[in-house]
Figure 1: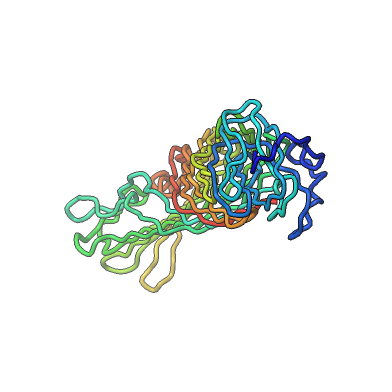
Figure 2: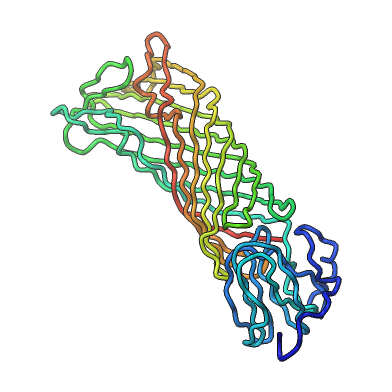
Length: 412
């Protein structure tokens, strides 16, 4: 009831309940004039009362929904779709609807309004910039100092920030289901480490069948890497909870490179170059959970998904050579090896979204990616016999990537 006026009048045809995705009444919106509109009745998730002088504000955290701002002329009472949570609405500071748990309660909504944008959304598209760091790899001493202690270990490599982009789209299919597609890539995850200024001469170790050169004046190890992934998921939102389940298929390409360079105390030097690559294909399962939504512009959600993958033809390719005093190079040999492997890949993220309008938002978050059972370049250095050109491959490595994401999200 509003100012003593009953809100039990018959419901006009223009605001009768309809399924999400039905666009039959969407053409009624004509911009900044009074027009009929279809109210979003599938109001799921916890919302809060919000004062907005001269207007009514309804919030909805269901799939594909957004906030509705409208100038009220006449309130109507509409039975809402059964769901978890409660809804409150204020018009000029006066409460005008009932609230409570799901199951037949009613919501007062306007019959005529000035809408600020489309109420329902079929598409949700997000574009994010990624700033990721790679965690340290496995321990592998490569150079010893004159006292026999470790002078350089591959585990001490600290990568610089890798940059990339992530593009995602969600297409609503009915009230509670959707199809989701995502793609991201990031690179180059460069890192470098040098032998210390003291402790020479250094000795090369764990380098396959290369001799343990013992008169090395200085050495350095550089690494790089890249990742890209594409996935498609089927999403199902639970009406009784803030969880959206997802199941789908994912492809991940994970590559890495390493280069060992050293100079002898007398003259000349040498190098070892290694490339490793992985192609993961498999199914995944996960959830998208709404952690916080107070009915305003902010929303916080978390995403987690993981799966068992087939690592098709993981490979490593290595080569070694010497540099003479005159600068010419002499190849020592090259090797390669491949293997099929069962691998793991998982992703977790926490995201905060601020809706600037009812269709455009700014996003910021933190994401973690972890791959296990993969070939990493530095792990392959000890596995090469350059004399006869044979090699093996280590596919028991792991890669951890984590960092900040930020971008925009749009719905229509």
